[in-house]
Image (tube, rainbow, N blue to C red):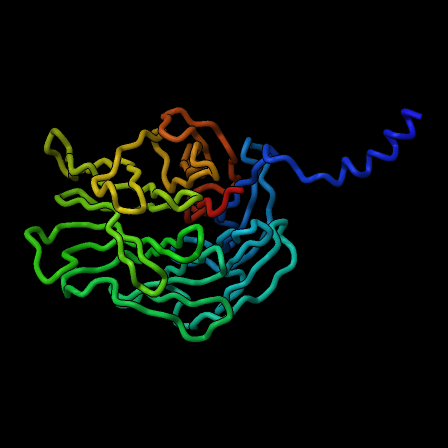
Amino acid sequence: MRRLVLTLALPALLALPVPAFAAQTVYFTAAGPFGVAQIWSVDAAGGKPELLRRRMPVGPEGGAAALSRSGKRIFCICRKDGVDSIAADGGGLRRVGPLPRALRYSVVTLGPDGSAHWIRRFTTVYSLAPGARKPRAFRAVRNPESVVDERIVPGPDGRRIAYVAYGCLGPTCPDDGIETLLTAKVGGSDKTVVYQSTGEGKEIGEVAWSADGSQLIFVDGTGEGDPKGELPVFFPPQYLVAPADGSNPAGAPIALPEGVFNPFFSPAADQLAFSAFDQGRFELRTAATGSAEASPLAKLHCRYPNCEFAPRVFGWR
């Protein structure tokens, strides 16, 4: 009788939802042979990476991809002049919508809803919704001496974006060397200053959102040059975290392992994945947030300079 009960109950047990502690997956783009970009995935605990997309166009930062909010599909520029999507296992290529042909050599980033974002004339932010032909645009800076960094970073809900402005944001400033990390709604409203710095050797970059949209991690120069005064002057970078609501525009320094870049938060923001360069090869590493101790995540077989751009994590679920 007991054997019969177990036999009848087994199918029901197998149909239960996967528990919350199921293994997580990290998704990243990397350089492939013959000047193409590729999409890969790897278990967040480490292991052998799985190739999901073998060939896709290369932009100024490599391949463009974003994980959908559901985690079931990956939005990508997998073919020229358009946004596509593939299943999280690499199959089921679909066209999402067109892109202007003039963007072939521009930095285009994708959001978790399949939207595309880019900069024109160093001042204007463009956002194209999935399937739309006409983008929304807003002037990110109005001072003629100010510019916006080319990389727009969409938030995890697809409703807000982050971007960096170099120079005075208003008509006048006491210091024109100011740099500002801002967020805004996709249409340009509700601009929020997340972080500001000024001085020689400052340059904000490598911006990434936490999965819940509550904070951003980024790099800035320390402003401290070579203590010996020798040339070339080197300004070492430092990583910071700041609340996305602008409540701490000075940011808080955070420790990262030496020699890593392009950090990306885990879903719980308790870990970071990042690119590294070691003995002529790019690889991915992870560390607990705020820790200087890294663990290997994935090694890539392509050697520099054949791998012309670093791998970049775009999803962790």
